[in-house]
Image 1: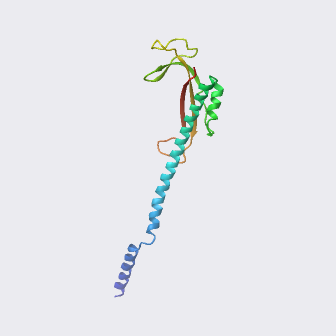
Image 2: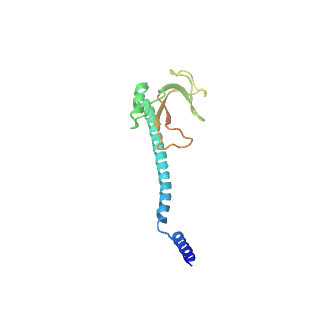
Image 3: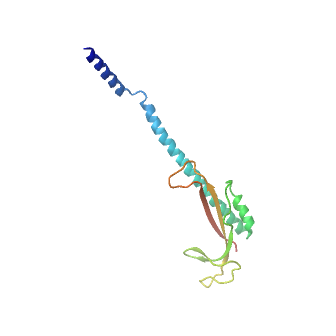
Length: 164
């Protein structure tokens, strides 16, 4: 009889343990919150990287705009690139270049040679123009390591403008 009573008590404890719901929501919250935090950090990291890529593109365009307004001055174009944004790691690398080019319906501009641009374009009608190519780059380190993505990343952008 005593043995049966102890067995019944153990069975009763097991039943109560498995039917208990106190604390289940805490465990569920811990699991879901950790997944949401991981997703939020990943989205934040991706967003910061995209923002810095846009800043690099804006800096390259600022250098090209400076060249189109003020003319060719390699060091001034580089200063325009580096001061166009608050990113500390931005550089105008490789340095801005000038080249002759002709408008092209399929590729936009076909570059050929260096100034002075004296020849005629392949269509035989237009005179080639002087174009400046401005490059910008910056380094971005991710918050977390991701498989297949090296850190730091080199973000680059190129902009081209006709200066005459």
